[in-house]
Length: 115
Image 1 (cartoon, rainbow, N blue to C red):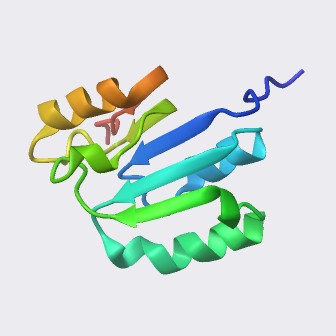
Image 2 (image 1 turned 30 degrees about the horizontal axis):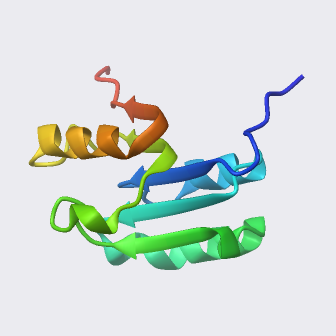
């Protein structure tokens, strides 16, 4: 039996790119997601994927640096930093902010260094 995300569960992904993880969590029962991304280059593809998945109305996408305006990022049940910590110039501050915003779960992933 597959575990489903609890109703009302919120997600914040910092550096979420096209938002693939958010889409999966929304399909699994999360109520809403916020994506904060430094690059605008993901926005067109992300919007297409959100519409295709039928979850566009449950996602807020922002372009910007969360450390430039930390108060603009609300707490969420899960905060995700997928493969972004290693590339961000102020990684310690980014992780600190993410931990402060995580009400239940903080998820950090790192690229695997292998040939």
